[in-house]
Image (cartoon, rainbow, N blue to C red):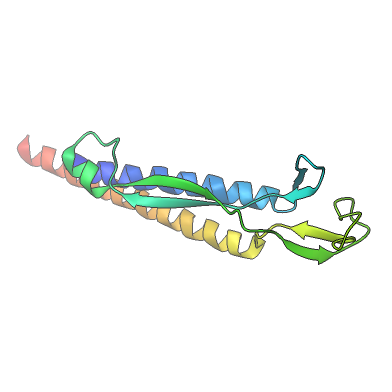
Length: 143
């Protein structure tokens, strides 16, 4: 019984991490920094990758059946360019003059991902509640 509860808890923890990553992407999609040469660098999106099993579970069943965050991957692809010479982050010289590097983050897709992660979190809560109810019923039968 406790293994089933561990599985739900590991799912909630994984989805919480995913939601935190999505929130960071949504908050920073128009953020910039500068590299060592002073060139503008847009915020790079983060993606949470899950793996089967939960190494932190207390039981063997929980370790086999849960899920955990295997990696938070940063997108290192070169940014797209948008022509906007009035932007303070636009390149000032060279063939890219007037172009601004833009992040690969799509706010609409991030919102959809957030809804999916929230629904998955809610599903794990519902599974944990059912597990707790079954455990309570089992204790009532024994008493």
